Length: 268
Image (cartoon, rainbow, N blue to C red):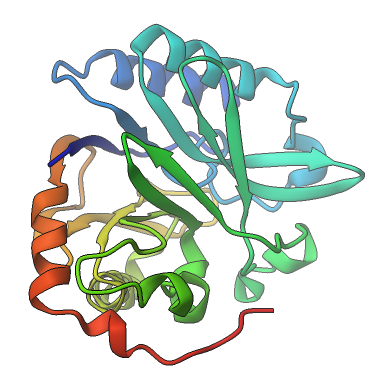
C-alpha cells in the first residue's frame, strides 16, 4: 500500500512583511533533510492574519505565486498554504496547491471569520478543492472552516461504496492562524474531523504574537483516522516530517465501516 510523506512548518510570521516571510520560509524549506512530498505552511503565510487586503493582496501573477513555483520546483515538492489574492476586484483568503511542474489548484476560504471582521474585507469561496497525490485524495481547507463539519463531511454517495472502498478523500488539511485562547476548540475539532470522516487530519498553525497582540500557540497536529494524535507541537517553531500509511487507513475503514451508515445530505 502507498505512503505519503508530509512536512508541516509551524512558524512565527513577520507582520505584513512579505519579503521577510518568504525569505524565512524558504530557509526553513531548504533545511528539510528528509525526503518529503508535501510541505504545508500556515494561513496567510506572507502577512499574518491581516485585514489590510486592499494594500497587500497580490494577483495570481504576483511575486508570492512565482515564489511558490520556484520553491516547489527547486525542492521537488507540493507546496501549500494560504495568501491574500485579488481577483476580479475582490479579495480572497486563498489556499494555493502548487505542484513542482508549476501547475496549481486553489481553494478560497468559504467560512470567513466575522468575529475578526474577515467577512468585511474578503469574499467567500463556494467550492471545495480535493487534490490528488500518488492516489491519495486530499481535502484542503482554511482555519475557521474547521468549525463547520458539513463542509468537511465525506459525501454520502462516495462514502457508501462499501467497507474499505473508495471514499471522497483520505487526508483533510487545515492551515490556520488560530489564537491560543481558543486552542482547546482547535485541538478538539481536529480530532473530531478525523474520527467522523475516517481520515488523517493535519492542522498547521502559526506561533508567536501578531501586531494586534493576539498570541498563537501553534498546537499543530497530525491525527490518524481513529483520532489518535501522531504529532503535536505547541508554543515553539517546528518543522516536522511524517509518513502516512494508506494500509492503516484502509484497515480502519474496513474494520469499522461507519461511513456506510452516514446520513444522506445535499450541500448547496
